[in-house]
Image (cartoon, rainbow, N blue to C red; front, side, top):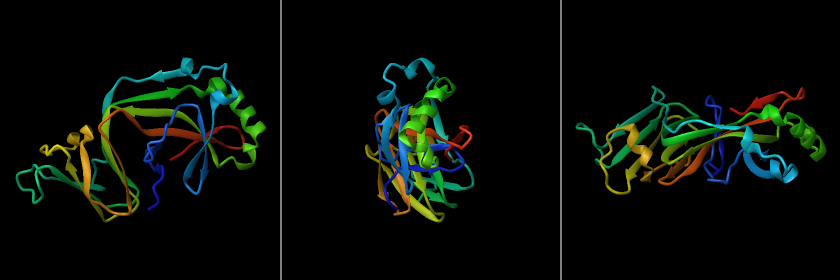
Length: 216
């Protein structure tokens, strides 16, 4: 599978698997599911500070797909057949994401305050001819650390090993980001970071009536 950012269907999030410098107000062109940076809102409207219309939530941990669609086998368990510093993740269905983000904070823009400016920008740049191709980032998730794995197909298994040989017994252990893949598949994408990063974002494109349509 080509390395690229991926729309996480059902979550309304886009996974930042390329670790791009994503930010609220950035405009991308979608080309065959790849995201090409086009503009920053401030490039066109430098006098408008989006920060005054951006709200931030309090930090908290986020976990993904603790459901029957994804199976976890922790090496630190008493009956496990893998090493205690490993965890095996099995994706039973396609297009699923699993993992844990530590101290995640959501920042979200109240876009209605700049709807007029966005409409003019879209018209001036000719984006109205390709409404489905251009997206605007209005929300980002910043995490202190974490691990996310996305699988495009069902029946896929990956094995993660703690880089410091720590014992792995629960999903929250993945939140440290101190992991490396020891067995993976071409059908998976991973975000593994032990430092602050932006693993997820939300974006919308405009419909013909200028109402936003959120990706995912």
